[in-house]
Image (cartoon, rainbow, N blue to C red):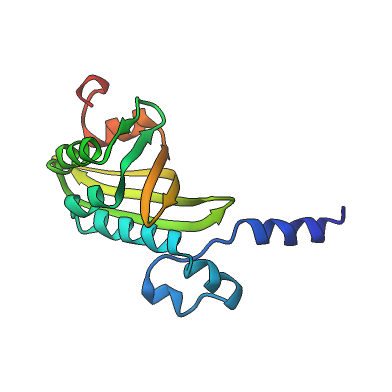
Length: 163
């Protein structure tokens, strides 16, 4: 297969877009269709809820039987359990910004490449993260997070046994 054809096929499979309404005005026509996908809209709502520290909204965006799985630890299952986990974590977050580098749809999931910048109990940190989200009926069904857990905990100023 010709390399140009292969690259063109790859571009159709993964179409990164810039997050946020201000950025959408500059999205090329082909990428604009991805931006309008309702799964992307749900993920953008989730990103916004994190950035403004609206922990109730974060919990509400999960399906009743949703799963939050930081891949290095056991998953949290169920909206109420996820909301409690996020609320507890959020209590120590003085500020947080999810800097989105790429967001797009691959198969049936939304993939987010980002850097999370935060102040947690006075400790400033930045950690690269990839999130993979399954969205069903306007809610997050499954959210898998991939990051360096040791780096995250060190930047948060906590030991592995604390979280």
